[in-house]
Length: 213
Image (tube, rainbow, N blue to C red; front, side, top):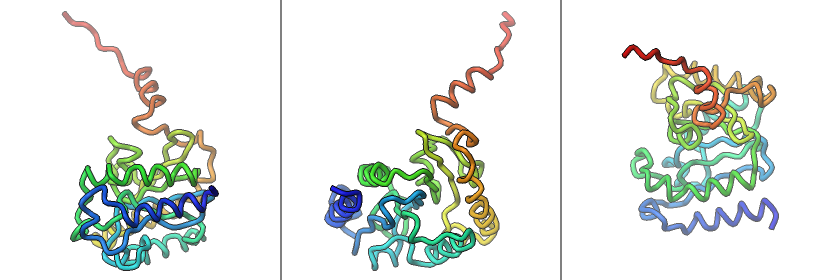
């Protein structure tokens, strides 16, 4: 099967998925969309009201803001793949639960393997936690990390900037730096905080404590 066919197969599976309770409240599942050979993959958290109605990711107000952010760096959403960590809308747009993240995990992992993007931009803390589980988004947003020969760039979710206007300049600034981050060699990025490479560096740099007794 071609990558396009494999992605379509995942969409078909997601549409009838009953792995978690979110299937009871969904109207339309949102598998994700974009080219199968996308260099950049954006991963958000979960569908909202408009996404649940249309079956497409980021089509509400947060989606319009994302389109603006992409346009600001001369990029179109048709050039990137956009997905979420959960494929069905959590009721009331609540945070996805651990069992829901786990249920959708295989779908997302298969999408990543098929597309094999050079860069993954995580939008929001739940998306970031999949790749940088111990990181705090307030500390790492807008930075780049290398993980398994891939660049991970954590960012605030566009919806966060809509709910907290004070975050909007940060989100815009982070996006403006994206072209520069992805144009640099992968070696220029810091190792992911939980990677073996980072742990090795920490062990080498950790000062030895004196035995006082």
